[in-house]
Image (cartoon, rainbow, N blue to C red; front, side, top):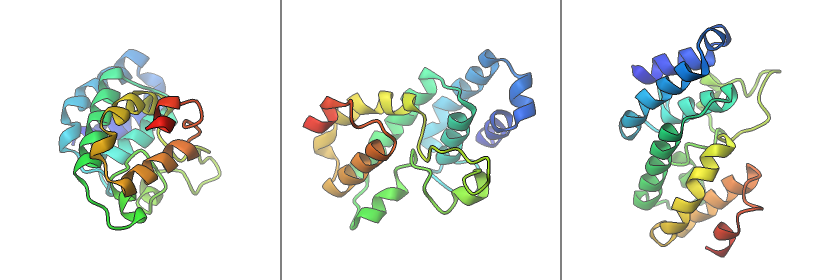
Length: 163
């Protein structure tokens, strides 16, 4: 329920304008301890939806991003995909998914060009990803590399290219 409230508060232009940046950050920091419990995707409050909302809103929280990256590593190291498309299920930072039609503006004229999480997420994820690269199945590694590349964040990341 907290995620639903956070999504509404952050995604509503009027509410976002009424809330100070400090209040928006506080909301994300209150959600951060619950990230491990959130469904990765779905029609209601999900980690993917919440990450999309803060990406579009242009807000961020170090605590929230750290918790989201911890969840990403946990999912990447425990999930065993059979084919490349399976990895899409756990890569919640990619908004190229069917459920996004219900909670994003990707099909509207105002759709954001970016189909991936904000740059700060990738900045936080990259070093931790390198630390755990040996624990991640090759199929998932390929999909993660695709998300970094398509999001325009792989080029400057020598640590990821070496891994």
